[in-house]
Length: 379
Ligand SMILES: Cc1ncc(COP(=O)(O)O)c(C=O)c1O
Image 1 (cartoon, rainbow, N blue to C red):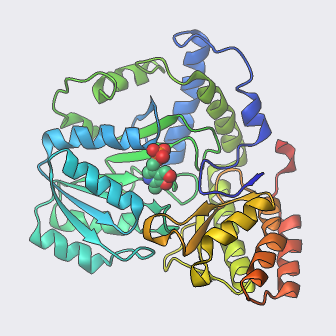
Image 2 (cartoon, rainbow, N blue to C red):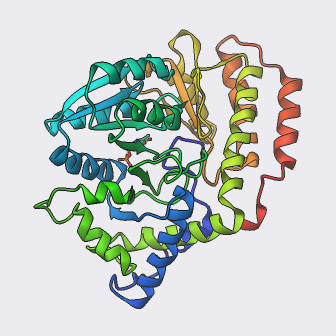
């Protein structure tokens, strides 16, 4: 099955092969060397000199660690919700007892800076929580401009960014943008199996942390270990080995080129969608995921037909279940993979009474197949 889902994304064979061995001991010199390499690439990808901690668990775990810590020192938080993940962080902040004010936008849109500014004027925010790339709708949010807007009113506010589908996909500069906490995970832009979550933490945030009773999500403890290229508890060692291979490739291929490839694929997927007679759902489309509006509530039917033809995509979530499909094109997704979508999606479009422009689609396929963004050396 060709994986064009919004994640877990396509894992290339050389990354999968790295897991086919007995586990290392988690406190061995070998593991320390692996962590050293991974920590260095994570800092590079995040655009930071600060620690990017690694926890065994999914992206939600690192988000929960950050929010749990936040709740001990902040009483009020401003959130943005324009999709499922913004909603999830808003809900989590409420569950941890913080006073939450949520700036909402319709799904597929980002709120205006004026909305954010107005919310800040009315509401004292100790922290601001926002998703960079909202995977549920394929929507990019300009988090740098949003954080600046918040900072202009509340200069000491902590900035917490969910970058789970944006690091390696969109430009990201944790230090230059003054972000305090950045969430990430293995299974999106890093093209690795799920199982590890990343938590970039600023010195300012760490200094303000109240002592915490817990162990697993204890950030100061994890930072001590980080300085020794270690983690506190037995990590998912096979995922770690896979991630190390992916990181080695990313450094050699270049972070910027990975981001450019996703942006190129976004443009090509948009062209395919439009030539099939369909429409891109988001008004602010992300580089790594394209949500496609499917007319007459036929999204489940189209997703099923794509799967029958060997292509896995994501369905719509919550109220969008019948209306959109989501195509992932981040990480190790290459133009030659997206080219395979063309005959199948255009066939699906004709089954729902649309008239794909087959000549134009053929030209896109040709361009994709010879694109320099294909890297056949990795098989
Ligand atoms: C933007 C975003 N945030 C959070 C999550 C949750 O991550 P996980 O499923 O790894 O817990 C996802 C997963 O798709 C996501 O795309």
